[in-house]
Length: 288
Image 1 (cartoon, helix red, strand yellow):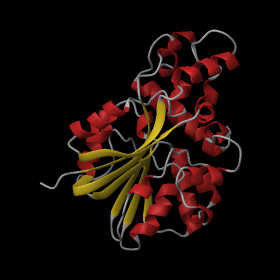
Image 2 (cartoon, one colour):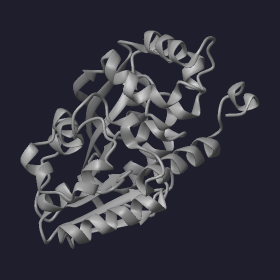
Image 3 (tube, helix red, strand yellow):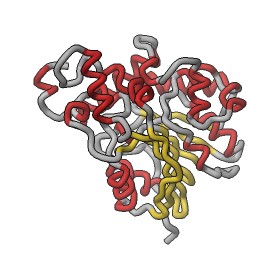
Image 4 (cartoon, helix red, strand yellow):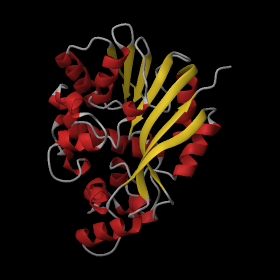
């Protein structure tokens, strides 16, 4: 990253461009997804750690699992019924969409929304490979969704809203597209306290789902301000130093800290350890 970009906070368009580029490169094979797959072992073991049943993961196309970059299982919180319309924000390669499609059945529908064309194409390939016909993938921005107002029963999202520059717009859009009485189920990275500027200004940390995170209190307040009710955290998973290292590994050359890359990464981990967690959050749109 040029020095002049390090010295100033990134604007919304810079952040979106970086996120789109990074995830597009991962899914097209340019770059390894290892920095977002913490610890040793297979990706399937990792997603089991996030709360997915191994039997569910095993029957999905391997590409849907390998190119999932979540921090939890939003479907574990969602008692989705047959016939429901589900919207997955930041659907990636489609893993959560394929699992939701089973829940809603042939009379229901799942919409996957992602801003990365390569991810959309990969998700469509995975849906075809799985023989799933009640899911569609749309290219679009979570801050301005190509989804009709009051058309969705459930909104789910897995470690994506933290990547968006304007989270209040996202929550306002969630409120708009939900039917009255519609539900929200989110797994996302949040903070206890604001991040050090050296991490918060780093674009690769945004891509790694850390620098874009806001405090849990601010996150929940933004949801309530959008009109959502029953906003609450069901569970929290505080990331260990090793898990944080996996999220920040790509940042080691770009962090605005002194010393060599390894020392910079170690300093960043020390600065944020115990302050970053995956929160499972639920809410609903009130019935008028």
